[in-house]
Length: 92
Image (tube, rainbow, N blue to C red; front, side):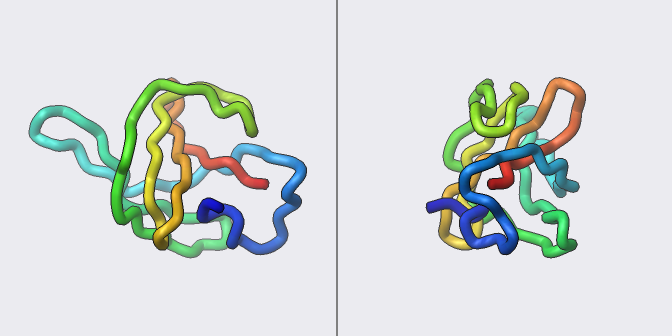
């Protein structure tokens, strides 16, 4: 189960990209780390931890970029930073 399982009005069989606003910081060693994001309903979700950062494709929603595996409200979720400098998540 990940955080998107809790968002209302989602069809569990289909997935699409949801572009989100992200608050992020650059570390002194040059890494970009997301700290929170704004879901399409306006709710702000804090990212408690970034577990993994790697280049990957979103097999559910399409697209490729840097995939951040994050812990949000105790659940694992993926946040993608595309090559066009936009952030998205997978909606089901």
